[in-house]
Image 1 (cartoon, helix red, strand yellow):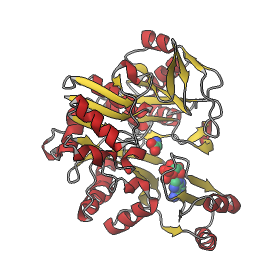
Image 2 (cartoon, rainbow, N blue to C red):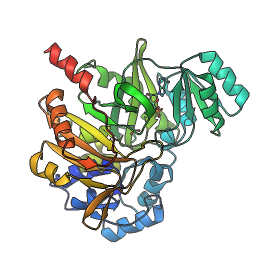
Image 3 (spheres, rainbow, N blue to C red):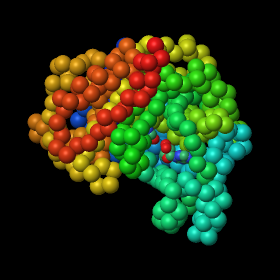
Image 4 (cartoon, rainbow, N blue to C red):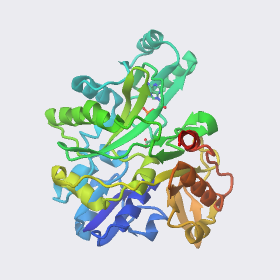
Amino acid sequence: MKVLVIGNGAREHALCRSLSLDPDVTALHCAPGNAGIAEVAQLHPVDALDGAAVSALATELGAELVVVGPEAPLVAGVADAVRAVGIPVFGPSGEAAQLEGSKAFAKDVMAAAGVPTARSYVCTEAAETATALDAFGAPYVVKDDGLAAGKGVVVTDDVEEAKAHAAGCDRVVIEEFLDGPEVSLFAITDGVTVVPLQPAQDFKRALDGDEGPNTGGMGAYSPLPWADPKLVEEVLQTVLQPTVDEMRRRGTPFSGLLYAGLAITGRGVRVIEFNARFGDPETQVVLARLRTPLAGVLLAAANGTLADLEPLRWHDDAAVTVVVASHNYPAAPRTGDPITGLDAVAERDAPHAYVLHAGTARKGDDVVSAGGRVLSVTATGKDLTAARERAYAALGRIDLDGSQHRTDIAAKAAAESATAH
Ligand code: AMP
Ligand code: GLY
């Protein structure tokens, strides 16, 4: 199978890595890709947001499957453009991607489908916003309605900060604060059948101890030893399947990857948000644990034949990923700094630990930083403690001036499961 992946993040590197290990994949292409993806796929300098250019490339390459990674091209209708030229595509239509593209739309779908989520108000005026903030009280949760690359949500005890964030957005969703650990659960769907993957946990705040600003995600791990073993089945029945059924009922079936961001509250599971694509960095750990070759799974979703797929198989190993971010991420990331030590990781830590590139580029013989989240170091091990040790050992070999990373990814879960054994 000839596969074309669209995107340039660590998520796309993780997808390409898994696809490159799949014996069914005979040719692997990526647009636009990054310096790391270039090692496993042939890169093409095509704008991911340009549906006509992506579908022309897919046709020219004779691609038999196109996988659209990030939300922006999905919301822009890139999957529709590829589908229109008759090539199977993994990723929802632009209309269905509104589940991520508009928080107000997602709330409406959840209400219709009876999916448990935070109570909320959609506001466009300062007076409405003030009333809604007052109704819920602190901590205040204010969400930009549209896509904001993980930076559209403010959670604060300071009502003035909440109002200031709302004032900078056209339309906001104000909602009740959900208290409890967060879980990311991904499901692959063809619009009818829903196949959940293994749950993961993401670390959204920039600094250790969940301090600092929200980011796109600073690390992740899977499995979640502390989670109820029935969680996945419960979320399938109460969240994922009803949402997919409601989208089909509306005439905008959702196929691709449905990502449920969940809070496990004292009153039960609640949806924090939906995304219409694989999460980053959770994908790095979920795919590290998936044994079933990936291409056939994605193709079955694209072709509407998921009901015929064998149950997914998983490694028993745990996986941990730690993101290395640029100096000054997320506020004003500095780019263009050389990254060293990548060869040392490849020589000493593979295959149990490896680097997945995000914001990297080649400059002569050097690999340099080219974005906020620069790379993520992913490792597997017999348990979270072993995977963590490998990830941080490999990360220690990498040098990037001024870079930052969290030192506590999966630390609490690893310590708790170590004492429980
Ligand atoms: P989102 O972009 O909707 O995933 O929000 C980013 C982060 O803000 C989430 O991962 C949570 O940590 C936090 N957050 C969002 N909504 C709520 C909520 N209703 N209650 C508590 N925290 C929230
Ligand atoms: N890890 C959060 C996201 O992908 O949105």
